Length: 213
Image (cartoon, rainbow, N blue to C red):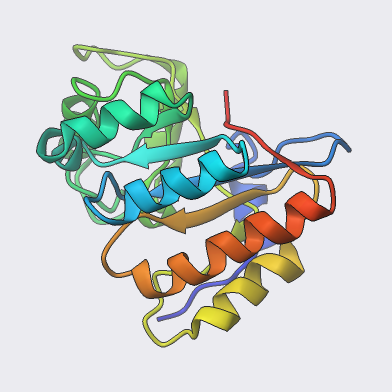
């Protein structure tokens, strides 16, 4: 499995209209969580966020929202933001455009948000342009704001140690960073170690954790 903790400069050049980092010098970090809701991981995350008075953004999969509606409601009730992560975690590079758009708008029936993050970070220029322009004639059409990231924790990598996952975040996060964790079974062993340590470390340094709007 090949991935980079920080996005390659060439990707940011190819997709300049996607949000890779929030600008500004304030000591603010933007935690994001992909692939939930999850019956164990998401409540764990919510409890840890509450302990540090932190807000985050959850990029949810539509089918998981259907399966765990009470957990999804808790995310909203506790003041966090949500975003669309497709209905079935589709790869934009490998999915025909019409099928990809249909899947996003199916998820939009259950996820009321104009934020969108493509699964695997894979989306074509054509797909991203149409989603941002709101030029698709679809039920629930929105002008989507496409959110990428500054730092991948690597929690999805089963070969990565929990400590290395924490170090990935510790060494690469700064003011304005958009950091990715996952509320999923696959990421659990690394996320449940790295997230609390990250919250503690950066809170002691005076950072705030906010959701993306």
